[in-house]
Length: 133
Image 1 (cartoon, rainbow, N blue to C red):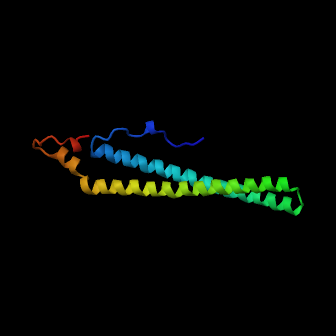
Image 2 (image 1 turned 30 degrees about the vertical axis):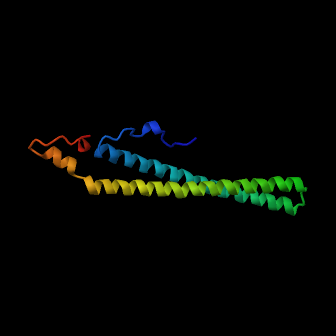
């Protein structure tokens, strides 16, 4: 069972800069958790594949029948496919984390401090719903 958050745990409505920053931070954390989960899976699958390959080699050395060797080879092949798939998950979740972090930095660089300035201003300002989360 995964400990990854569900979509319902995320900010579902972006109404301004503050909620956008929260949303991007949540996406970054979610991608990081997925990346950690994928890294752990790659390690587990590597270990399992090594054990299955050892079992295949031991069975081949003991001259087991072709059907048994074929079944063991199929297990090694499927574990290799699973590991390759999780390695792709690892790469894409790493990219998603970096993209969310970069987007957050971009938003802050372009809009950071505007809400604080708006709140600190002692003059009435025009309605700025973008900065009024």
